[in-house]
Amino acid sequence: MIYNFLFCTFGNGWHCWIVRTLCVLPILFIGVFRIATDAQFVFASLVVLPVLVIAWIDGKRNGLFMAILASATWVGSDIFSEHQYSAAWIPWVNALTYLITYSLVALLVAQIRLQFEREHERATLDVLTGLYNRRAFLEGGTFEIERTKRYKHSLAVLILDLDNFKYLNDTKGHASGDAALRATAAALRSISRLTDRVARLGGDEFSILLLEIGYEQAVEAGQRISAAVNSALQEFTPVKSSIGIAWFKEADRSFLEMLHAADELMYEVKKNGKDDLRSQRFA
Image 1: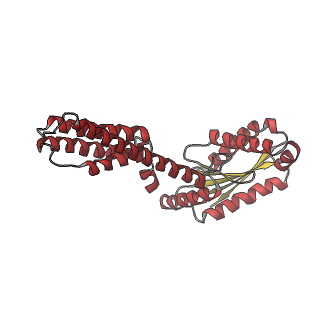
Image 2: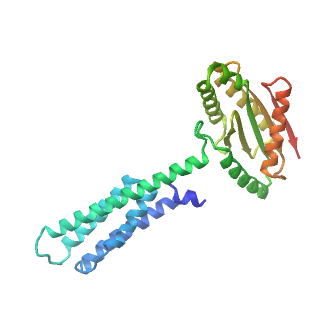
Image 3: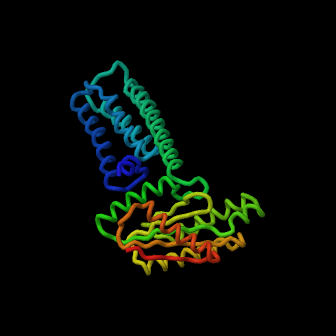
């Protein structure tokens, strides 16, 4: 929740629009106040705060827009007030100085924000496939399990492991293996619901957390996933997929225990010929 609030780049959520409005209004208010007081007060340091905030939540483009707005407000308040300068060009030089300063702040903050996002992605996403990595999946899954406990919703955990993947790596090289993993990830993304959490657990093992789903729906989803993945892997013969689905009427155990249950079902498929799906209800 905190991350979503702080990192709402180019977002249109209500909290982002409130922040934008609260940043623009003080700049306009300061401009009007300086006109009313004959530009006797200096708020240059204060005005940098809205520029900083907008650059953080919206990036450098809108940050630079705020820098221009702040500088234009500054020169406008100087010109329309009755404050007398020794030369007519002084307000414009002041405005240019502020514009350069505010723009540098906007660019610097936007770059820092971008670096934060890159670090966040490295910490939560699998580099090869772009899916959640194991750590992020376990953390997110644990959070969802706690939420599911409150509302007493059913859920399912799916584990998918590629069959004959080592053979592909040994015969066609790791580049082909990586391509197969990316194709699998793309198939999982395309077939999964927006509410599902999809992850690569490591190696050739993937998992999906299916929230608010009945047992029959979970099995049907598993069959669609199996068909989609096997279709995506046609050019990587003889690679196929083995799937285990553990369905839970309620979240009555830890997420790790749920993963283990699905993993056991997947290994049963492996022991009995591979390229199949096995599911089980857990009351």
